[in-house]
Image (cartoon, rainbow, N blue to C red; front, side, top):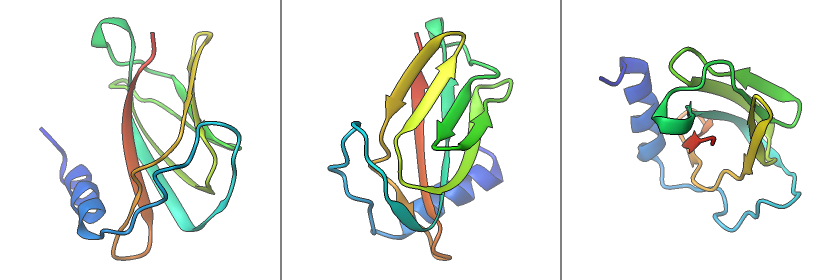
Length: 114
């Protein structure tokens, strides 16, 4: 079941067609986001089990996953995100962010770290 807050975030993300550029590479890049970016999602390990305590970072901004592998990270940096846990690491770019009605950019992703 999806929580009311998560539904609001999903609906707000779908309400506005504005997108960050989809061509952003996973190489080194950086830009200022006009406002804040709320990045959320879930990190799973082998066998699809949630990873509790994985670190998700964008620049100096960091968040840790909860017992269900979920996280929310608020940043103003347009840098690649990095997910790390127990010596494993993965890097990626946000390519599907959407701006909601109050001007906040929102994006989410799921990642299996194996």
